[in-house]
Length: 244
Image 1: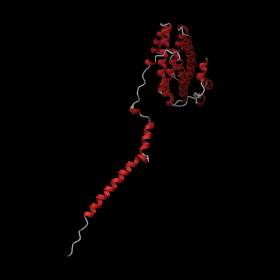
Image 2 (image 1 turned 180 degrees about the horizontal axis):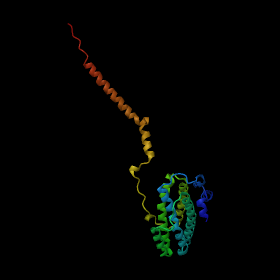
Image 3 (image 1 turned 60 degrees about the vertical axis):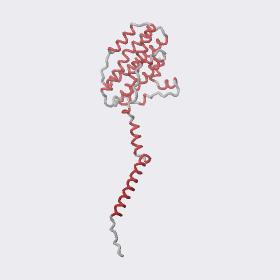
Image 4 (image 1 turned 45 degrees about the vertical axis):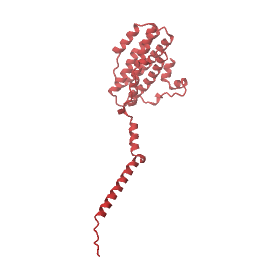
């Protein structure tokens, strides 16, 4: 329960970890204002789906695992997802979004794997499946939080991000996460240079230091043109006749 309070109470979080800021959710509005896109609806649905399988998975962790640490992780994550699920259903009601009432096929498969496992086998399946799932939803939350036009979706994304970060930390505290098995982060693409770099290039191109060679080149061209013109005019001056 303490971790549930930390996830939704910035003051409690600061007290637990001094110096680490927690987003103040109270500063965001929640009036269903702004356009709701298909991406927004998909995000709310995905948060709902996460709770539909992680809540029963956490309950199984308390029953099937022999490790007190795994049992505690399952209890905390299951309890926190109940809080997040309520926030999700409240947001969906405001935005008139239909939510599923059962896990999808992949999530049902993962739950089936857990039902068939016990002891350390269960521990590895539970930790690996949940850690992989949180790693997939994490970038989706960031995309919605940074780009949504709707204030209710924005607030839900911010809250969901705090829960997911907490859950990833809890899962990793088990000491059995297979980090080598996680998807590799793709290398940065040269064509996807940040807009800041493009702006820097534009400002640099317009700066006096960068434009100095251009000025010197133009000046040199003017000098050469002046010399050629002078020689041309001298060559065309009429010769004076010599009178003896």
